[in-house]
Length: 406
Image (cartoon, rainbow, N blue to C red):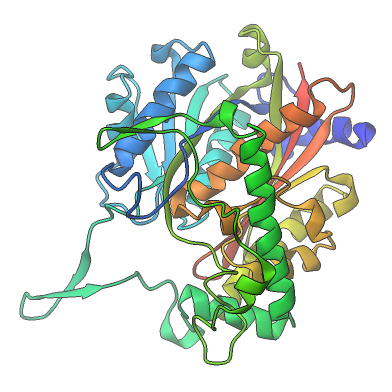
């Protein structure tokens, strides 16, 4: 669909085609994604993020002082603007500011979208944008009682009680029931996610995008989630995890993870001036709100609205990266937009790799960049990629990106 791809660039984020305002992703990197309280448990969020920022600056050939801002998503950190902290920790000069954004699980993708929209506003800037989460070191949080005492809570509330605010697993079960997603489909999809991730890791397809980390005296180079030994018969033995007699289990749900991921966002004109050979053009994005009790369907609604606005069908999209928090919501969203699940997450997703909350949306863009380069770098045609993530509180964000040789 190269003709369609070319026409998309005419109205990136609603602006006229202008190389100085067309936002592009030049480089994308991530840490290994590791189980919470596992190999990366000694590292705080800034310790995860700073090496990625430093590696991006080096790999993209940036002058650190030329970076206009660092835009980072985070969901369960301790505040204090970790984007600025990590930028300084990464060795960027004090002249480079930072901003931390929070749209919970969508934070990393929304940070990249925010940077892209700032580029589209003009000025030829350069941003580092992405997300980070250290679930292992997330601070304990509490409300202050009337008498001054502390009432600790496990998670924030995402919607007023009248709207419903179920825990994530219960919401995933709600989606499975409402949209008729069977246990068999969920298990089969989750198993395939592990198998794809195992194959991708063995083939070295994650290597170029992964920044090794030093943690507790060890160098961590690879994701630790994909399970080679997982089988259908083993998955069938898992009991319902959240609702009695339900279909959502620990085996067809993601696990909490620690990770960071970030990208370089600038204008097409500046990318060419820097000598870049390829890029992901950020074409458009959409965030949608849905019923908080069915929060997992948010990504599907956002993607559907985005494709309609761009005059596209799902068959026009070459690569789909969906944050697989639960198999039930992944399948419900893919069904909603008419996408064959076999076309999504070709190297596995969060069901195998883990879900690092605020980092996960940025991981999607990093994966799209890596896959596009592996599959289309030698091709004369461009490719369209769709990043999708559902968000606590009943939301979803989707972004459309076009891989192109420059």
